[in-house]
Image 1 (tube, rainbow, N blue to C red):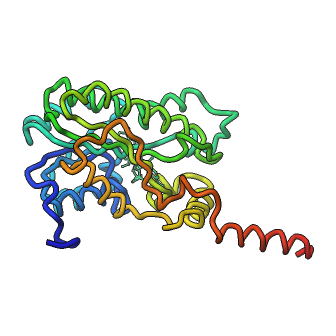
Image 2 (image 1 turned 30 degrees about the vertical axis):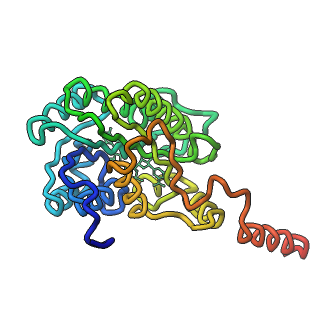
Length: 281
Ligand SMILES: NC(=O)c1ccc[n+]([C@@H]2O[C@H](COP(=O)([O-])OP(=O)(O)OC[C@H]3O[C@@H](n4cnc5c(N)ncnc54)[C@H](O)[C@@H]3O)[C@@H](O)[C@H]2O)c1
């Protein structure tokens, strides 16, 4: 058994993976890692994303079915859970890798947010986690000992100006995870968020100033930014039984970014900038 062939960590487990749009998507990489580890799962995305993206190719590669669901529609989420029940029976894990801010897309400044759009940001990116867990629970498909993972970002704790109302959405997402983790713990069901470093994906690159956020994190983190594949392996570990008592946590997956004050590389950059300013360059 090795890293390429997997460790059989998810053998016999079933799940739902939300949010794979194209090959760069974190959810796409998680799906491949789950397949490698022996899991069976359904893939889901919004109908519009299914038309634009290339999910069928992933479905074929992993043997998964594709179930459309716009997570902002409660009836879609309930219908999806019933469909999963029909196709897979009960499940052991859920990946929530969904995020979208129309305000960020339209480059609205935080001080000038469109509140109607902000409702959509919060609904799609955070309240959707509540709906997903609620209907997985109400339809009785989530097994005892299961694991739910949602992807977050450090914007929930520290403010990144270009991340705008997504900072608020991630704070709410993490709160929903804690609240449900508290309520489902008696059944051994874990609910955690993984706070991933900037990653080059469709959602990531859609943020104005993303390059700056990416480079800053890359230079600040002692290990550099982890990739989507690195994140996928971390998610696999959280779906596995090896982490059965980890719940209600926001887990940083960022190469050390969150704990580092400043790195030598950034110090040098600042020093060089200061010197060139002194010289009037
Ligand atoms: N890329 C990064 O830098 C980064 C860093 C930390 C956390 N994250 C988070 O990771 C998650 C996945 O994002 P990604 O970077 O892989 O980008 P991505 O664009 O590949 O994935 C975002 C997904 O959300 C889906 N989505 C949007 N609206 C939806 C709706 N109404 N119903 C159902 N699905 C909907 C999109 O179709 C897409 O598949 C998001 O929660 C994102 O905030 C990303």
